[in-house]
Structure formats: C-alpha cells, structure tokens
Image (cartoon, rainbow, N blue to C red; front, side, top):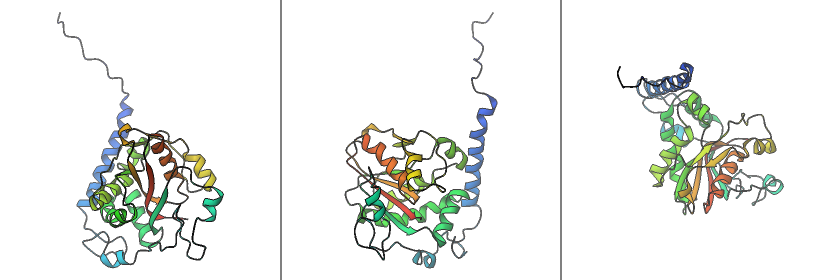
Length: 255
C-alpha cells in the first residue's frame, strides 16, 4: 500500500467560489467597458475621452467661503464654523475639503464609476483632485482611501475610492496606503438617514490595519461625502492608531 496520504477534502463548499466568480466576471466586464468600447465623455458624449475639456471646465466647483471644519459651502452665511458643526462637532477629523457639488456631470460620473463598471473614470476624476491636494494639505504624508466592506468589494469588483486615491497620489506625489483601513462590518446605505443616524450607522465600522501609520499626516480620500460621518468614523480608527492628523478629501459634496 502506498504511504502517500490521499488529498485532504476541501473545507470550502462549492458555493463559496461563487463570490469570487462574480467578482472576476465584474472585473472582466469593467475591462471590456474600459478598453473595448470607444471612449465617450460622460457629460456631452464627445468621442475619445471620458471627460472632455469643455465639461471639465464647467464642473460645479464648490466656491468659498466654506466651513473650516466640515467643508460645507456657506455662500450666504457667516464666515466661520457652520451651524451644524456648532451643534454636533466632528470628533476626529481635523477638517474636510470637497471639490465639487454633487450634481450634473459630477453626479453622472460618480454613478458611472460606482455602478456602471467604468473604473477608468477614476483617473480623470482623481487627477482633478490631485491638483488641489498639495495646495490644500501641504503637510500631508500619505493618502488613505475609505475602504469598502469585503462583501461590497466582491459585488463591485473594485473600490472606487482606492482608484481615485491612486490617481490623486500620482499628481500630488504622495504614497497611497490602500490597506491601512478595513471596514469590519457592513453598514446600511446612508442615503435615508439624518446626520445623527449616519454617525451612529458607521460608528466603530472601521479599524486601522497598519501600525506603521502612527505619526503620519493622513488625507482620507472618498468619492462623495454628505454629513462626513463616514470620514469621521475612519478618522477615529486612524487617530486610535496614533496618526498626527486626519483630513478628509472628497471629489463631491452632497446634501
């Protein structure tokens, strides 16, 4: 009788491979969209570009004055901390800056990036942010994208915030620590919750997986923020890990 033991039975159920297969199919689909079909501007439909110069110039930029804490625009209000931050101040973020109002072409671009598999949009959108990061956050030493829960990452096939951060880093000359934060529990959608509900929804949802990040000056990167509850929850995990400062940077501001 042979002394070679039979192969050990796999502990995985056949169904365990389905999420991996779905993720692979989504990645292949995104690649087909990105590289096979002709490029068209998300705003006007012009050929050979995902965001043409004309649409880029017409994006709804957020114009100061803004709240120095949460970054909300205050065009008709007093200069200084906004009423929301006075009532319910941020606990961990040192400040937030967002580039554009979440409307028009920016809304369409973010929707296509997140839900239509057009991952290549992260490059022009992240480049827009990257041009501002060094100016807004001159002391920053590292970029950290807001993470997705593993189940959501499997569904989407990629983390849009991580793709944006990569493009930002290339322009700003900053390293990206894509695995520094982990989302340790799934959270329901924030869209139907008020400001307090959003903060409670994401409280304790993140942990820092990079002890070496202690002492760094971090810029968190996300696609859209509204009440900045998610960014503040991420900042809580980073501050617990010993980072010196945490600033939020989002492509767009909703609400």
